[in-house]
Length: 385
Length: 178
Ligand SMILES: [Zn+2]
Ligand SMILES: [Zn+2]
Image 1 (cartoon, chains in turn yellow, orange):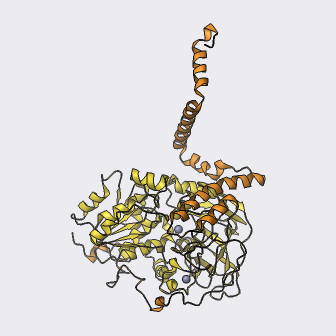
Image 2 (spheres, helix red, strand yellow):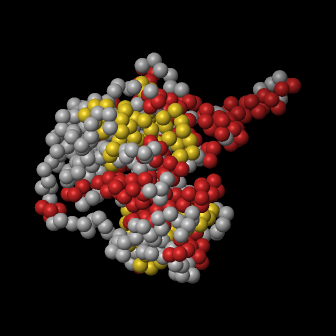
Image 3 (cartoon, chains in turn brown, red):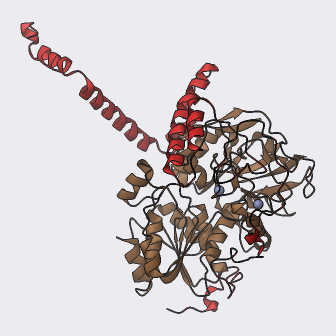
């Protein structure tokens, strides 16, 4: 089968690989119909996540058709069209029982901080992903969710990660009706987070980025205020303070993570020398522009080493700081309703449809922000058969 | 500055998920008491390990399912095994892994060539797309790289060669090389 193959930083290709097989009685094999490239794939693509091995297949956002199931799989059957949450969750460990499906204790041998992810380095458990014609999905009784009749594959594929991640970013921000929320980063997750802030009753939503095309997109999709930190302000923190009667925002969402631009020190120590877990510019801005007693919600991905974050201000300001990988399965019932009721239309984020054969071009277009790309979806050749 | 709900009529679903009890620690606070019993859940069937899988020393065993995409191999594999002697709390866990990744890239190229494939770096880096959508940016980059390379080559050239050439050019007519 055709599959994406990682060769090293900024080098990927599509090659023939062996078909995945059932390795555990709760496994399923899924024929992939749509799969996305995600901003968090770019951390792998850029070589910033430790233990990203040459020869691995990425892809944690995909939907497809079940073609084979293990002996203990009863909740889905061959022929079902499913959306596959990016977290691999057993459904029965103490963390799963609390609804923290992104923190399952039975899916990632290589690390204990995070749960297992499909197609996310060996730090994420070493599971191959869905940027392929077929993928192995562990714990198929629990994760894969049948796509409701009438929902498009394009909407469904965006429910595997970025929609629930954006939604959880807003949820973790503890928004109370009327709150002012600032979202740093107008990538797909930031845009979705901004949109979801309204669902929690925000009174004002501001998004900040440096790419005009993304800000324009965010303004239309999320119906929020959008500002360019390179053009519209000298200092984002001062800007937010001025915008909020010198109080600060009620909640700030960091939807950027390790690849943040905008600060030379952070770029050198975080992105070039890898002395910290990536450039924490957006996190600094979030902590420093939230009001005292406010909430900082982090969904941007940071690497696992130390961070030079202004942690003193957490204490000084009484901030609640909250971050996690989204527990996709926990949000799906509600989000499926929102999509079916027309409140959210995630597929509007898709700007590029790229054949899996051209995966290298897809990664380049998304990572270099070429051609006004917001969200690319890859289509395996077998998907149309 | 205060806004009212009527202002948001144009936002589909405004406030639909608002919950006065919403507090940011949810669902961590959504507790049953079982978490105090430690690792007490009924574990899923253990996947058969058909290849080498490394596991964090912050847990006593393997997870019930494991990824089996790329087992550790070669020099990079040796470095990874070393890294997994240390906990996730240690630099000695993460930094060797990053180093192993770099070694692994070279191993990948050697492996390609050993299997009769010369990696098509241009295509793998997606430069076809860059060329199509950002030709001018790419030309600037290529020109800069060429200038830097030329400068480096000149700088790295043995000093004698450099002065010889200079002298040779300068004294060409006399035909003497000093
Ligand atoms: Zn993703
Ligand atoms: Zn679990």
